[in-house]
Length: 336
Image (cartoon, rainbow, N blue to C red; front, side):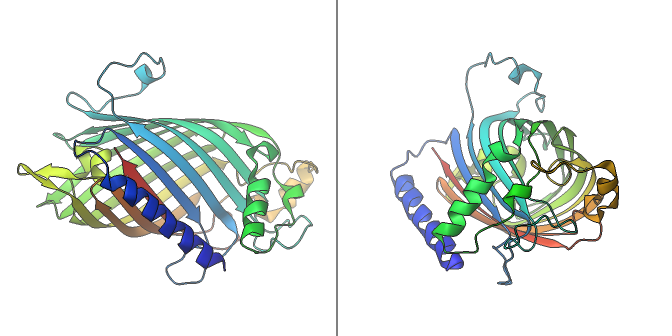
């Protein structure tokens, strides 16, 4: 039932967006709406779960602009040099973490604690198509705890699809403000006839939500626009040799090595049951894994101004002594 609901929702979204795409203008798009859903039930092997980082929902509006913007924060965000292709964005994101067994109302000290986060994001993605590098900056502001509405969202969705009601949200991590700055830099290492592309990148996250450093290579193979031509061109029609290419299809492979110092969704006091220092020391699930390996791969399909992608991410444990995890990501892009 759950898989049917997810598939039906995807098909309906595809039809609605594709219908809109047919009536879209043929000029180069300057705006992009993105919707993506992270869910550990999505799994290419067919063995979905409902635990650890179990769900992430994100909606974004990205846009290019012709005039200089006077928003003071934008003036602080780095650009990728002269001739850069700059995209700005606003986003809203909700994240959820739960233990393996959500039917138990009691606190489970040897598993992930219930946690929810809700935050807004201001982003600036700057690509240099000549020198083939990019700077990507994100400013995050939000909240962890009951105000994130993770309990209400998960309970409502599980009721809608007649799935197990989550019983342990009274044990969720307490209210905490989330402020973060995320900055990534990427550089092209190899390109071959716009069919094979190898890039490398690093990302730093600093703030009350997460302190971490990630490094990664990224392989793209297929029929595609050059990655550093800009964010919007990765998911829309583009021009090559004075001809418009309306269809893209490519494979993405991206192993990520992350060094984590702090993650607010994995450690903290419970909202209604503050723990003593002794309890925290004895709780093995509190020990964050300071090195996390992710293996991410998937496909992107784009036609005209509509794109759909699916990525599968296999992760080592987020906490020492606990289990590995797998999450699927379904993303829809609509440009105009």
